Image (cartoon, rainbow, N blue to C red; front, top):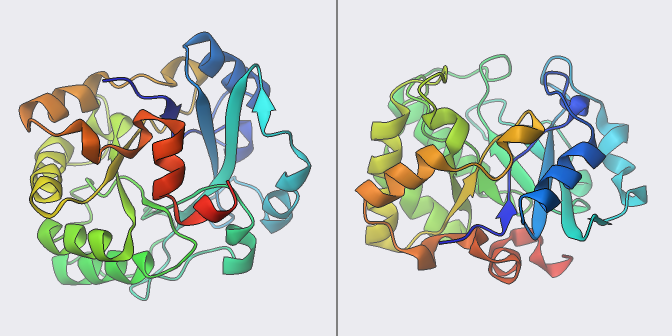
Length: 241
């Protein structure tokens, strides 16, 4: 199996990453990728940029070093209603969007019912392509309901390599990812493999996700970023990429 595009990466702009956009694109090209999604943290993440940065991304070339760039955002899910921290009109003008729960930003309770409802409400946004790292045990979720809602709303679920790292700070991620993948197999829900790279060396590295995919015997046809064409067909943003 080959992953042609890394769907989740960050540059210096996000405030706690370590490379420029050109450095990230150059590394992606060196590693033989055909595309790279750069998904900077949205404004409510401490240290990240404001709305004008995302509004002005139209001026940045979408091709560097021979690879296709998808310039987007990792939105912060703010509450149980699935509120996000950029206007939908701004997000729709980007190439790709992830929505994730982050500790500094989420104001809701951390019960399974609340977190599940939070994700379901978030997936109803037409501008949200991917739910980022839904494996974090600090935010418990009913994975069957999550997967069923993802299938219904045509939202991609992320298998996050950084989450699965033995040095990661998220909790119970491997068991949670395996449970999610089993339900994805049952209901035919699509996933993406994202590295969540905050440094260029991590781009396209899937050693931990690969292990989980093997253990669950997960079918390649349900992985959206095995080709650029397949990914574009699965994005809610696909009408413009």
